[in-house]
Length: 115
Image (cartoon, rainbow, N blue to C red; front, side, top):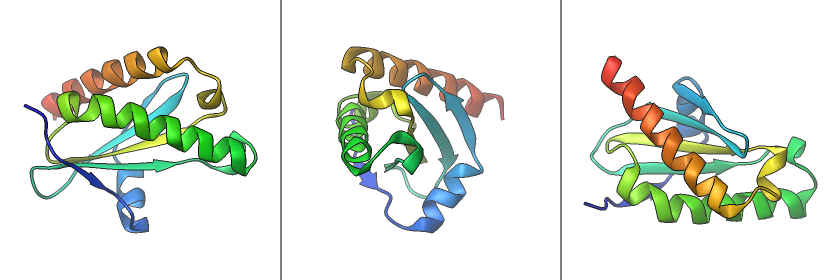
């Protein structure tokens, strides 16, 4: 059943997610950490390493769209997810980004079960 997405906007949420589980994929890095509530928290970030402002904004837009399509069905309820753009995010095929996020969420689910 699709769940509601909640945007992460406070810096503290991003810092907390950075201490959680990390899954590295060619197009992004997924950070997952448990949160309060039953909804799915999602945030996006792109550093200057990704490129100029145009490239960073494009990378964030692509990650937002991938998250919008994948997270409601595959995201971990009660967890915050932060997608960190990498330099390859801008040119990476959208279908590959979608597949990588689905795979990364499955990996995150396994890590959460082991804890």
